[in-house]
Image (cartoon, rainbow, N blue to C red; front, side, top):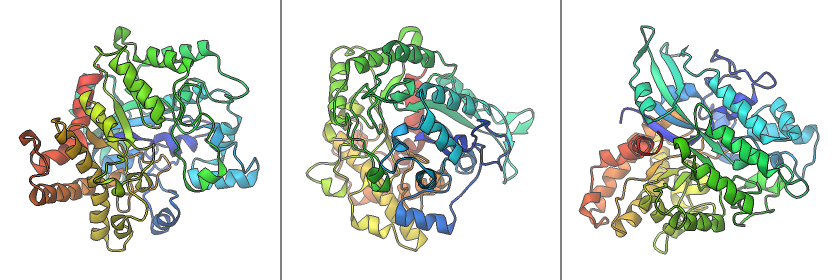
Length: 475
């Protein structure tokens, strides 16, 4: 695979935030309102990340993508939810200062969110911000030329990746696919208890998005707070969890409006279906969705997607993994494979490993090579669990795993793999893990077709599976 792929990141989160109030995506990569703004972590920022899980640097800016050879990226548009900012700390300068320290999106952005009355306007603004530099070439610190292009189809992806020169200048191209995190983006969930949304307006907004020039590949149906469509899973940790309350609607199933919105998203008239990402949905909502796929949509061949997830494990290995419903059970992973879906493994240490794990502690050391190795072990465990589970069911073991980093989504990244610029290193260390696995556990996979070369395993995870998914599902 020539390029790496990431199916879930937020490169607009901080740059769009710092563009307020003008909302201008600066073509100058030295401007902090530019999506190209390069801001690698310094030693102090790595320390506060390690100790407090707060990321001040930028993880998924497009300069880092260029330097890290990320050629396919799914950019998740996310109108930040008011409930983050209408919290137990109330309003005031201290609250705003604390929230800005945690999120790094800028005070003007926080002020805007605190006054927002319609998430859909914010969604359109973020989309327009991303479009401003679509196809515009920039020259970065390595004196090379780069550009990103918003992809419209699978065939367009090939044209983007094969574009080596523009206006007689050599250029490195990044293909961008749009996704959305949270269907509150259609205008729901502002004040669900006291001021329910207008269903007609919500459905009209869904139609608008389905007719965008760059139709989203999928939407993460819910996010951190109740959106009047379906229940969400518990997701918040640390100081954010203490300051906010996400209990209302948590762990519930679909609402009548949610079922109507779901039907409209999955309607494939004029080839404009938007797929569903089940991350953040409650376990109850997920099971209801699977039931619909098996009945109402049984002849539709709709793939199940987890854009940025982790496994829960089984009796054999669950001690290695976080045991919370925000992660995914074996029956769900099997359904993803059976529908030829995609499972993006996120790079958040709070999600992919059990607290106090020995490998996690080793990844917090000081020797770089050991840190990189032990952090890669934590990712490999996810890959291996999925592979052995699918193999035990006679399925292809390596076809759904991909990267869904959630970089710049307020995650606590694995040490050593701070940003997308570290993907070449991650690929190298996953190759070490794959070689060790095939050598030390040659009989763990019972199906002969699953005993593929370590190089192919890693190429699939780092890009091929994502590329093939696009070719099958985005036309």
